[in-house]
Length: 452
Image (cartoon, rainbow, N blue to C red; front, side):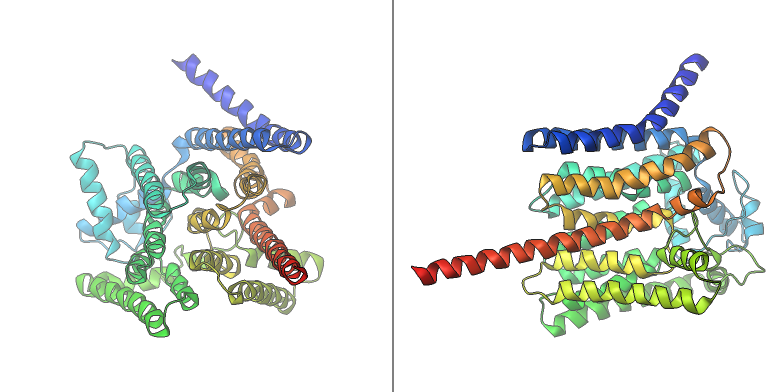
């Protein structure tokens, strides 16, 4: 048995080393012998390889995973024993593996996490890693079937590839045990009801998603760009905000004693304990805000004014390009909403590696009508590049047990955000040339009619 495990580990290591060459080889093959038939098989090969590689990395890092889910379990145990779950000291009394991580979810979420623990006890599963691995797989599968049911022009291979490998978001959720895949499932229901033209229900599920983490509530503003009457647009926005407030009020009345601690925990005011607001750069917060700040400091100076000016210019460009896309007639609202979520994600200064689940479905709905070559490029940008650039980190930390603090390695930590920016630019450039081609075709037809 030990020999089998050792052999499997060696296969994993060789697979990680070989993967960049494999992807580059596929790209070269595609460019040399491109035709629709060959391209189709090359694209399938790339998708399957990325799926296998991602599953292999998840399996390889299994024994180092689950610290966030460990915190959720400890928070429930601390609360049941009459202790404040927002105190790290109280959490450490009930943790399976020692951690300094805080619990930063609303008090009402304790009921949700408690129900998960009760469910696992009912089916006699006690290993916390197996517990959340099964649960995360169920939510990932549920997301697939929700979109399958709602999308008329369903693209199964593209969706499976993006859900599993896109921005390596699923890997980070399995690694940390974070609830990003639960949020993804709720977000898929938001898309489902948008596809069904039932915006009030989509607002309900957007509010439920925001009840876990407040940031998704900002996405409701994109309903302004729908083709519904203004009264309906603002009712949808108002409904979403009111439901979020309702959840917060109910949370307070159910748990008044710990609500105060919750807000202090989020703001990092509980005696210097960890908090999302204190997260800064790299793996913890790979947002473009910090990438731009760090690059500007290296190239220019340590001035906050310079870095903030460059970042403000970047934000202005993203808003301008999004606005230009929206203002064109006959835009599909699903695409507007998708591009809006991506635009927000690009400019928001705080994110986490596991939070990139929020842009997986937007990328799918923007890319699903691409031709085969552009789908290949999408998978390359969104899945292959982030995966390959972080293989060095994963192999060093989880296989060789060492970390690389070089400048190049630190830049790779931002690969998720930079690849999202690349896709944003890629989509807009492609849309520009498609619109231009359609316009030229329309003018040519009009000229032919005039000649006739």
